[in-house]
Length: 148
Image (cartoon, rainbow, N blue to C red; front, side, top):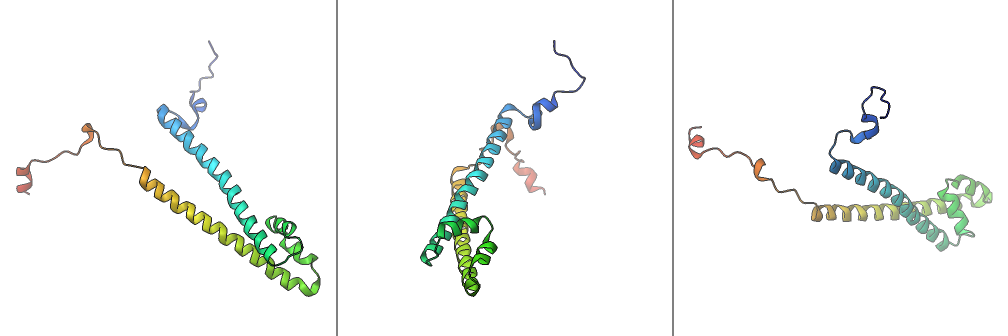
């Protein structure tokens, strides 16, 4: 027989506590889906941003688009501008701003489209449960309505 320290097993049960097993499983599934969504969302939107920023830099004829977009996504735009010749720093800053804005625009477009699709799927797939026979609202007799 295991030794007891006098405490309940609530710590062992965790946040689910006394919840029925179905609710604990659903809660676990929701938390897993949320974490997976965070990870995939960051990865996908980061790729969208990088792809668009690289396209803007390539179209402008930047000498090293891959290296420049890597520095831009790492937050090193100031270093890229500082490494440019003094007479062209303004042009480099404008180019980086354009690449950054283009990347963000595509990220917002993809995010908005995903939100719309998710909302439509929720409307189409989530249905309210039909009330059970034991939970129907009580109906008052017609004579009682007439006296009010």
